[in-house]
Image (tube, rainbow, N blue to C red):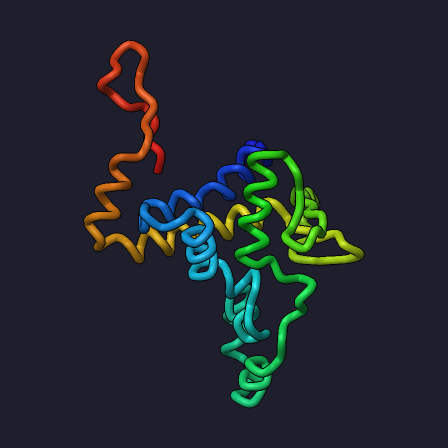
Length: 185
């Protein structure tokens, strides 16, 4: 992301739920483990059940300043369904993007990823208009990265998963193939 290599950042972000899901549950079908991981770590922000979930994920400090009746009201209000990016959407987009280079959600909406505004005055993330769904690539990638950090903390005590993490691909030095220079972590 620092070098603005957006395609690499996006492809990695779309593959990471797959990798985490496989490390956690290697025998589960890829679709199930991808959706399960997304729903545990990204759903509240990308496909919230109510406005409380969305606000608590995107602006948790604002919840602290609300009176209890306002918090309860948020729990009863549905989010804008047009702005949802579900586990199914993410999985379909992962398949379409990584295997075919196509930007589609499950309902056929086209997905546009935008680079961050260099002036930092405009954020276009999780918006939908006329069959075009928009995500800001840096925010999405950071959200996936933060979700992976939460997942890593959750599985830190699971030795089987830690052993599988240790088996991930490595890239070795040409002059000394015993010394990895890059480990997939």
